[in-house]
Length: 214
Length: 313
Image 1 (cartoon, rainbow over the protein chains, first blue to last red):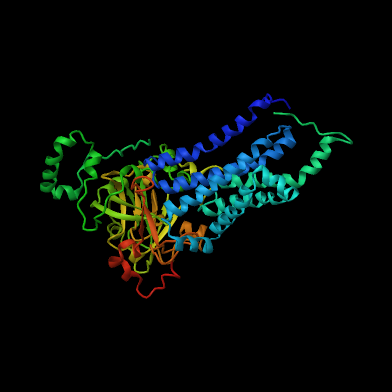
Image 2 (image 1 turned 60 degrees about the vertical axis):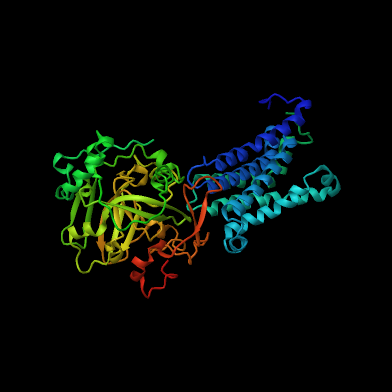
């Protein structure tokens, strides 16, 4: 596969920083629109939903890195940490918006919501599970934790499933959009048990996998 | 922007009876508005409405929000979808069939409905999704229409039905059908006859835009917004509690009565407070306590005397 020209190595670091910057644009744009009264109707809900949706998009993108490498030979692993951290920041902002702008820091109401409403319980659980992943996303933790790091970061499978479920359970009618995310997450998770067999088949008897640099 | 096509009204209907008989006050009003309103089409005159004592004294939700933030799943699930996807919908010509347990079943043309004694009613509107508006409706009491068909003694409920037009309503076609069509709603006869219950034909002094349920819709201000069925084509008097669409779709979340009640939560969110739409950006958005019966308890609580409002949500 040579669909994309390989990015020269000297631009790798810059491209990652660009991803961080571009990734935060939807939040900044939405906040500016909302703060200046330009979001229609119910601005707090609009902003809250925008943040939640982007969190889910970044989770899907994070999970897509491995299948893209397996299937198309494009190695974008260098972007995975940025995508995962963007997902974490969006979930955090989503929760803060709910807590501050929506519920006006009414902690009693927030605790009741978390305890009583399954879709909020599930969303909250996903957020809590994301915290250790964000905290151990640095190189030092990766070296320090070794194989345990890989194990710990498999939590992202549960988090992504919980995120898609949280979205689907929050709407009055499960329409095309939540179903799309459920399907995307389902396909990306289903790839994990399949991939050892696929990669073995791709390598051929005694062969070696050919990785392309993108 | 959806373009509203005004109905073609025969000359004899341009001056409704109630205006004709009140022509002194009508002329006085008209003279006052003459300079500003020169060239106003006949339809705007037809929506001239009398003042009503059923009006709340609260800041109106801006017209822009009332006509762009809507739930009308026939046009899509998003709040902006009804305004964006309803330009093909044709609210004229239109008829509403009133039948069932009545002495004189009748099909009403839109002209007849617009000629009913219209009133301006500023009502609070509380959506089941915990947001609210204050809306200036133009309409007439549903009881006035019911009187014309003479309900029989065994009529206990009133059933309502929305039009089905997949070719004009994108939410009614395609693979994802959000709800079973037609949209159905119902009221107990005493609720339907209550003076607060109106059929609305206009908002902000003009005929209803498509996204607000043109050309005629129900408004029951003490109930959650989804009871306010839109684009009505049929009203049937029955002796059994009629089915209602959201109740069929999720019976544990939406009851038949759907009276605004801060003490009975929706399973997925609290109903204790609400966000008033159109009050500025993030920091103006105003969460306020929700009132029992949406603040209309004095008028309607007696309808439910002795009823368990937790069981009958």
